[in-house]
Image 1 (cartoon, rainbow, N blue to C red):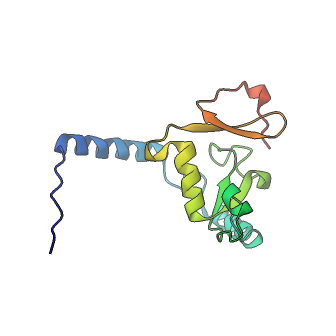
Image 2: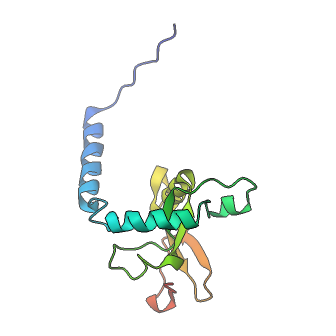
Image 3: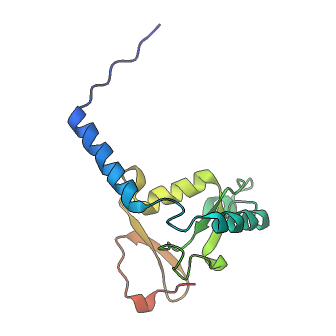
Length: 141
């Protein structure tokens, strides 16, 4: 039976990556600290009952949309005190795979550079790399 070739990694690099991840996770806080507590779970369950299918761009045009499992913030929020955190117009139902793809693209996962979603005055959302827009031009809801 064939055997997998051994993988050799520099232990110093691996240890450094693990420490970086731990520091990031510690600074990020728990889900409850970020506002995803019991109140959010009740709300998201209700939202998903009203919106059972994924509302991502791919699934909207697909003849077989995926069942929704997550409530996504269309415009990123900074915790439960952000006015957009609870605004239903800033939420959409998404399948797990679609939400993971969106998160990886916009938050910089899998080697992607982080991107910002910026709402333009006409209500159109534009994705771009390192977008910087004057706050007066942002439409927040």
